[in-house]
Image (cartoon, rainbow, N blue to C red):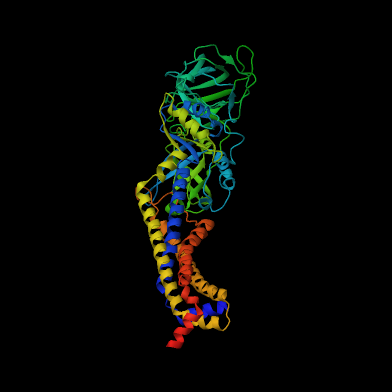
Length: 581
């Protein structure tokens, strides 16, 4: 009887509760919009902080010498997770500027977070591991390994020159544990004879604050000689010694000659003939003491190119694998699988695109990323070119509760040298405290509350009026034997249908407005679109609880309003009124 009577009443007077229902729709949709906007805005601020700091701590603009930064930052709390990043500006055909990130791809795949939608749901290892597939072993394994943390490296050399001119100059390429190569200042050698070229590493790291990141290895040798056409000679590296003190005695190392790769420019007017040549390891050409053959024997000739580079680790691939964003590929009119030229260390490097993503950490949506060690090997094979020093260092957090980045930031701020330190929690707190976004959120919440109050008042008034109208009908039904409880349930069911209808429509309307409007109104403090883009995700549990809370007040007021007049259920009084009429 109850549902039938409720449907009968709604069918007879369908427009009676139109106003209160519309107010309830407005209240629920406003509440859902306020909740969705607050959730999306808060999540966007945390995503921006996570994106800007690579998921933990980002260090840049350091005053330390480039060679001394690796050891300094590796000694911080959580320093075993630190990784260097080289950033290079790219001029795109459309006039915009992109960015190139040269980083440790294997470490990024393991440690750096990237929101799932930005990488199209693919795992980080699947994206970044192929970038480092061309790197044999660990980044610091190639070359001649050096024990400990040497402060000075001595090379015992023998020079044989012909022609006029001063003696050659000898340089050293030093590689640290991150796979980064640094060129040490060149040392002048005599025209002929034996000599010791001493390279003071300690003076290049800003000791005692800075230090090189061990294990170190010799990645190559540079020889700069006279450009005179009649000048030629040979250089042999007979041995290597290291010292733990810049002025102390050096300890000779027992090392074997690695596989050298020669990179030398062509001589002037000689076609493609190189300006240098690797001489074979002749067992008869031992030093005067009868020791082992030289580690390196190099011949050089006069010509237009005055510098000869000899590097370890092979010649490297013809191109470098990389990951690009969709916007970057659109700007250069390329797709996955194409080879795209990028500028690195002042030269053009071919990058073979292996995957495309929405954005790259800290770089935005117009960027390309390559493995630093792989790119360094290609540059070294092109004549001893070296990667520029890292612009910044990332220390990703191991988990949401990892305190290592915060402790590292505190230690850096208390140190002697300055650098820019960006901590994820501090960046997020600064973004969440933005007063410009607090006003709209408070206004939406106030609007939802006001509409809920008005809807409650409207439902109470409508229910009271309906109770008076159906008093005669209920009196007759009671006289015929209808249970009083069923009639009370009929009034409650009528109000419940109206409230449920309004709440359901408001919920659907609010969810639609959230997905349409929120991506347009969530902006940065500079009124720009956030990077990464805002992710709209209504929490189902909180949304349903909010809808129920808003609908509960009108429902309660309607039920109380329909039963507050006791005369409605007074059968005798109602029937007597009918007889009198």
